[in-house]
Length: 371
Image (cartoon, rainbow, N blue to C red):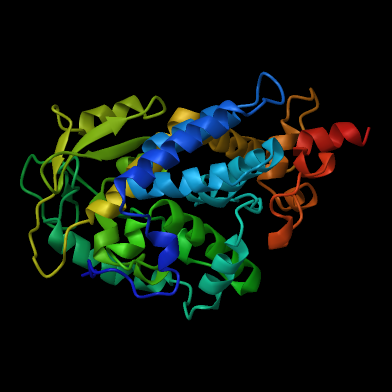
């Protein structure tokens, strides 16, 4: 069971926002003022919309940190870089956890490299799938051998006659792949992603002291039927907190496959019940993070974008469409070729300097410049 005491890590500054209400209010005013000064590059520039949506669904302490980052961007180019950093360093890796994820745009925030390096220097190892069987058995026992949403029984547990049953799967709330890596390059990438998670969802550290070592803990997992596991992992539905702890309202998004409506409660209310008190229920903080990410991905359109990229990568198998319909820029953003078009790593003293034209171009713009 996770501790609910504050972490004593030197990185607590990443996880704690000021408790003074006036400071929060002032940060929101400054956030809005900075966005009002932004000049879009073109009609398709969604920088302001993206940041407004991101801000809307963050917890209060995460909102403070985002405001701090936005206000610290003294140029429009650095503000766009911040958006790209949030997109490639948080949203896409979580959304595309089962496939390829893009190279991460460096954050323009002053001192972010120190935070990443500190986390990278900690003694953590990748999580192995060898632990999955043990986790599955614990979750099955806790969840009563049933899917926590559909209440379908586990097919191997002698379900009652005429009851719904299925081969249940263990669904992680914080994706398993965010704790799975090999080599120093992937380790550094993982550290970058977790630095962003801690910054914008501080309760993960301050209330739970949750690290990637805890990804395979029972409080980060629950039993689902395969189709709901897929939809949950794709952020096609989320569990919104109610006034009662461990009771949630199912919120579906437009890409939620409608056949799965049959497996949802008619009132869309799900209550987690514990059938084995040795193992705690899924933690509300983790559910809150999944819900926030789901809302941001769907409201900004980034979720659909990642899925389209994945389809194009899968359908094309590396071959460009003859009719020219392949979106090269976005495919580059999910491949190693993206390294060629990403901004260089900036030294802290460079963080508030305007970016050059080349540094702010997207992949498709780079292609145009070269022809």
